[in-house]
Length: 339
View 1 (cartoon, rainbow, N blue to C red):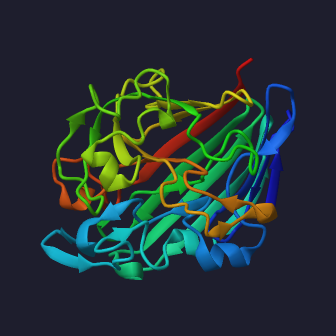
View 2 (tube, one colour; view 1 turned 30 degrees about the vertical axis):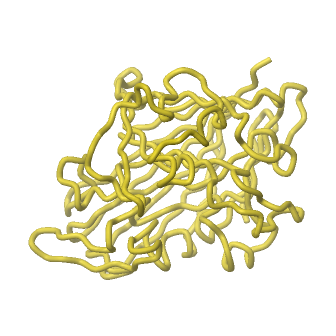
View 3 (cartoon, helix red, strand yellow; view 1 turned 120 degrees about the horizontal axis):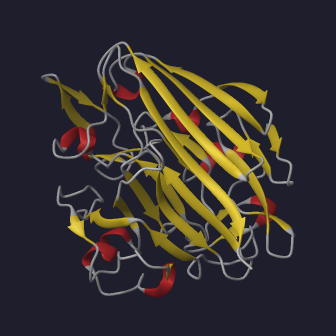
């Protein structure tokens, strides 16, 4: 376990197992600190029954249809660990390995460098992949994720972070339906009944997926809509409007505001997509930190990413990394309080 703390008292705790964010303590508008992420008190909980709480995800975040893809004329077979599909890297993805961790201190930040080498053929993926993920907690109250990878054979790569948040405070807020979300996305990718994108890129206009202006998660989550039925709520990739911040490639993707605490989280990323998941499969059977029972929609995740099933969807942005190229991605969570 590694503990990082910035100048304003924000505290982050991370395991080398899965790069898991175990806790993140943030102040509310009254200055009271609460843990805002879901998880377990012991490693055993993460090993036994975790829906990717707090974990690094790889090689491929999200789903690949039927656990198969064809690359350079060869078909590769992966684990089908989510119904008929491959999810989040397989039976033993990057969330279930021990990373090599090096802490560091900067002039206005603290952080961890996590490294893992995935061997050729691991979980069915081709090529030896050298992955490095850097967690940086700044005195500007930002948590920055920098992803880097190289390979010796062409392979799909789609790394992300899978923390579940309840900004009201862990164990305090019940469900997350009152959180107010803004997404910088004019389109999303509809899915079939197994949550694989159909290939269509659909406008959010006039649908329950329109979060272009601030809207509570619960406002339309139970609307009569085929896509909401497929996901049991929100479990969809949003196509981000890419503008960029001063040539950095970063785009403001999302803003989440929790009214009772005043906590705000803004997400910026270089990625083209964001998977918004409203905790639909949390059902009260998991007992987390301090014995808290995680009920239906007790946390949300926002996974910055390339699109699901991209290896089988040539029209989607490519996730293929080739020898001599570098995979680079950055996501920033910026935390503040609204009076």
